[in-house]
Length: 69
Image 1 (spheres, rainbow, N blue to C red):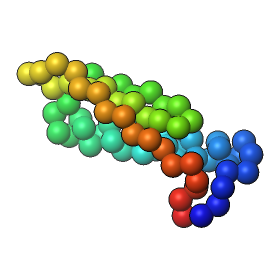
Image 2: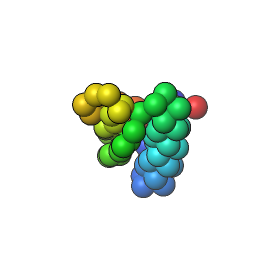
Image 3: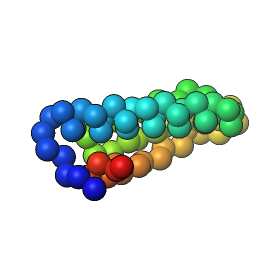
């Protein structure tokens, strides 16, 4: 595993996190969730979604500090 070594590595990690968030949103839509939103920061992903029969649910994912290979 490599440590982040500047903005280029950080930018790549954020791009990978965004791709992951988009995959999660797609999967949640397939499961019947509506109004899916995500907030992505350098260290955390927050996903808020609801099904038609319930109140919104919030999930937090902590992103790794190191690049995964």
